Length: 418
Image 1 (spheres, helix red, strand yellow):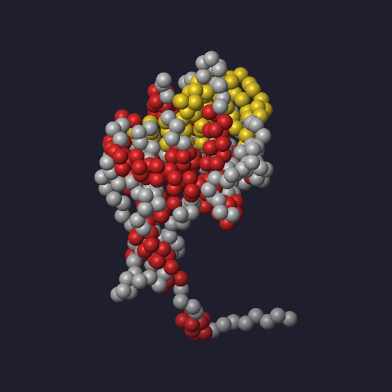
Image 2 (tube, rainbow, N blue to C red):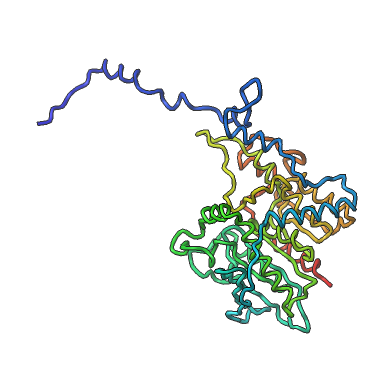
């Protein structure tokens, strides 16, 4: 028979004094540690994270844009940037692949929707949607644009078509992100592609985890094989661009690139690698990724600092040479629009490259509506910020992050005029 024991109050009080130190005594104020500092007289870090921060602060990219460039120096620098980016993208040399195949063709209001399969490399099938404006023919070729969606959006969403699987749907701003459809309705032949690992080219996410797609693992495997997600994505796009140039429906002298959010990164890479691209729509905010990484260090109440973007954004070695503003500056004098503003000093660096090249009118940027009049800063961004605080310094209105058709479509239509 179990006996019920009573513990004297005096013993309970004794046990409370002997108990482990409470979590409350380990709490700290994140404000005291938001900037990563050394407590040592020699300035060295015991924390490995501190050592990494020290290296990032000290890094001077070897091919950063210099606002004192002459016009000749700018041209020479652009060539060096393109050459180095080709090396970093690590495109494989592949044997000749099967020709693209048209799978279906259906009439829509003002354009024809065609589905194609592209075969960029052994083992690979890349489905795309091509929206061909009514009246386009070999005798009347249309300007064209290759469209990349945001991180977890599909090519079907870009084309204004039903999702292939219910789980792929992202209701927030869905209708505003019909990028390819908006272009086609304005006479521009538009090709929509999925980001690698998303929607039709995803793995098992259709059974339940979509629209959250697991791409970190395959990104890690690509890196371990000497490649990376961004190189993979750009390689597919580069293959499609080469095919587009040979289509008699397309005016090869009027080909553009348009990307939203994640899609702006392969668009940026492809624009640098393909000097014949006439116009670029960058539908996101501009921020050098190194500066952002240095700035976002404020820990939460558990002592966890902001985490980096997932591995798909990683291009090994890129910070050693240049950053996003440098890549966009190298596009001068080609037509470029940035529709969601960003860090003002980065935007001004790109504008300076266009001034040097004598093509100021070819670069346009607009801020989110929220920041068109009032901005927190026009200068440098401090360290010790949370992600939310960084967005304020970068003039970002995250809830209104979507394709700005009212800005981008008329701009591109004008930029692609003969």
